[in-house]
Image 1 (cartoon, rainbow, N blue to C red):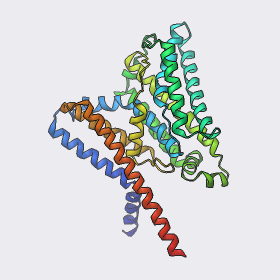
Image 2 (image 1 turned 90 degrees about the horizontal axis):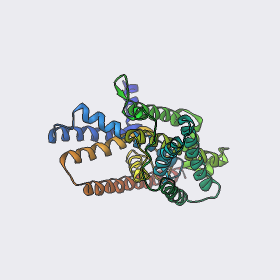
Image 3 (image 1 turned 135 degrees about the vertical axis):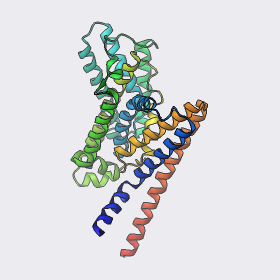
Image 4 (image 1 turned 45 degrees about the vertical axis):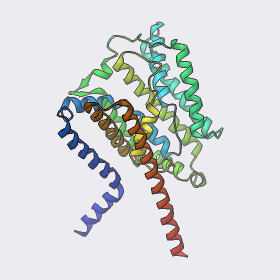
Length: 331
């Protein structure tokens, strides 16, 4: 019995915050189910989860970057440039498979550039990725003349609108990405190195971890996941808009911080981020069904970000005080 209680205690101590988020999400479902009968319909729930799949995929990459002590503002720009390159190349006669490969390689190069700027040139992550975001967004407008690119092959929309065994393909991709990287972060050497790099880079270097390499790798990974999200998004619209992903960085950072990822690095997990994405988007969905003005929704998102950052700051300051007390007691 004591062993069972100990196991329960370990689960709650490890996932207590995520469990609290799930309880909040369940409570929101109950409230909205009473307020609006359309909210709890299978069609509404599946539609919301399908439409947030791109955001969730990008959020996985952003979470890993933040855990490593970084920040990536260029994710939305990568979402836009990858399908734009695909469409333009296909429209000029290039084989579509080759167009996809070229666009994904470009995404990887963008991630590599971000990683090198931060790991080698010692740019602050926000400054380095802000620079690439601004430059790349301008490049997108130049190569597209500011117009959507619609030259995609027939059947391209099947990626976003198709299904396997009755489950929409975007949801399947989102689950695969989330589960795969949740495993990577908890069960592989790479995952442990990412946590070490974000938690204490000096100690990680001393222990033999090449923190520069890890930093570059997480930015490349973030760019590749953003590329996948951009492809899904353009498949849904059958078009590549130069404005795509404009607010994506804000959305995914808010979801990651709400899910328990520390802005200081070294802490966080993929399940928490996915729950954060679900909470934010089902709340927005509820607001839409209730007819609440979009500007109020933006105010709400800003408040959520402030609360998440405030909670993270308090949690970190509380943790440092605990360590000081323990150190004093050992003297």
